Length: 148
Ligand SMILES: *[C@@H]1O[C@H](CO)[C@@H](O)[C@H](O)[C@H]1NC(C)=O
Ligand SMILES: *[C@@H]1O[C@H](CO)[C@@H](O)[C@H](O)[C@H]1NC(C)=O
Ligand SMILES: *[C@@H]1O[C@H](CO)[C@@H](O)[C@H](O)[C@H]1NC(C)=O
Ligand SMILES: *[C@@H]1O[C@H](CO)[C@@H](O)[C@H](O)[C@H]1NC(C)=O
Image 1: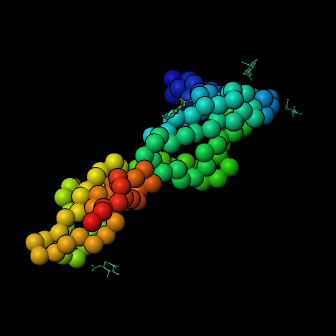
Image 2 (image 1 turned 135 degrees about the horizontal axis):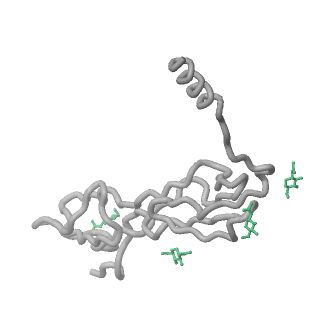
Image 3 (image 1 turned 45 degrees about the vertical axis):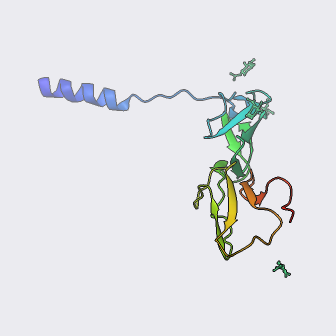
């Protein structure tokens, strides 16, 4: 009798199932758009069809889709997920008969300045001695050209 009672309770417990279901998912609002590292966002709202637009911070390269749309209560992007990748300069060019002063590596921080010089017995033959690591990850001449 006691066992039967327990089984009855267990049966009642297993039989009980429930969930809260929306009658129409196309009217669901979204919460705030998801966080993406090294980016901020602004959105037209959180209602269905609203659009969130992301911007990678300066110094980060944008890969993937910058927009997400609120659909069925979820922010969905139309393309690959957004990724904001930090930009670096790689090693600067080498010159024969000389080298450069300044710190550079395969991941040189943006804004780094290096200055070329010649070993003794060599003279500089070029337009610029100083290069700067630009926001796009390229080394470009800094200041005015060298004059003889
Ligand atoms: C769901 O809501 C949308 C927008 O209000 C409406 O166009 C559509 O007919 C609704 N669908 C159902 C099944 O009620
Ligand atoms: C969605 O948000 C609007 C505006 O805040 C509100 O009027 C509406 O009831 C919300 N809809 C749902 C399904 O929560
Ligand atoms: C996002 O960041 C950029 C650069 O830091 C800034 O100019 C812009 O105002 C920010 N936008 C929002 C919505 O916070
Ligand atoms: C400097 O370099 C240029 C281009 O490489 C070359 O044509 C020129 O002869 C060089 N000048 C001297 C003085 O070596």
